[in-house]
Image (cartoon, rainbow, N blue to C red; front, side, top):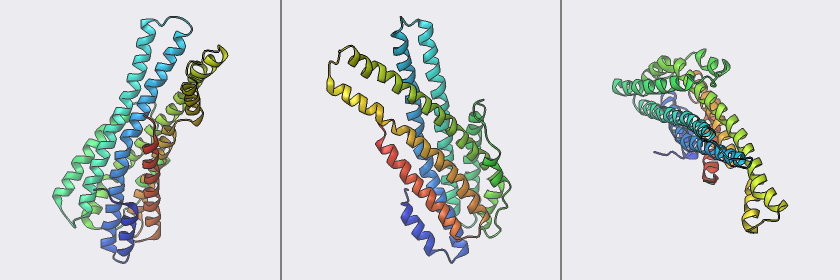
Length: 291
């Protein structure tokens, strides 16, 4: 179910005076937004993979302009593309497990105490942790201590209802690691995406704009104009990646606030509203991304 952020927040406000109900409502809204965020990561990761493949292809074209391309060179670029896309595939799998865990957490907030839902949450988290370990095995993924410490050192508020509180106490430290892993991987992808797009733009500028103009070989002026416009305008996938990274940080800070603050406090609503707003921005960017 997709919950409109404005509707969700309005519902929270109506329940603000009831601490037990507000706890479930606030966590339920957060879990729903978390599911929606996890779903946005697939197109973000796929765009990063596509950009890497395109960048390697343009580098091959650039290399071919200097002479013939050897089979060894082609295989090297192929492997570069495949290795990078394997990482983005792992991110997509991790995001899927994160979405499943948020779904279990959302169902847990809908009941007072239910061992079956608690077991489902534990199973979902086991998958998330396993896939997170695969991402952390990549040497380029570095998790800064401050991305974990806030949640690890947090004391779960005793006013949170029993079944939900048991789940949060049991998982919060490990969940902090998964949130931090997500941020770290997105930071790696963000840096690579910016670098690859800059290289693509430089090569395309030379091959598709500069060379035809200098050599007076503009066969199709309209195509050159369109290509030049696309190069100068940049790539919206960079903005989408930036928004995805910022949303990941807001997921972490919202979770930390939810488990420590009293139900119904303004800070909880502010954090959830900020997360909902960033998701709206991210979805808008994904809708405009070129394929």
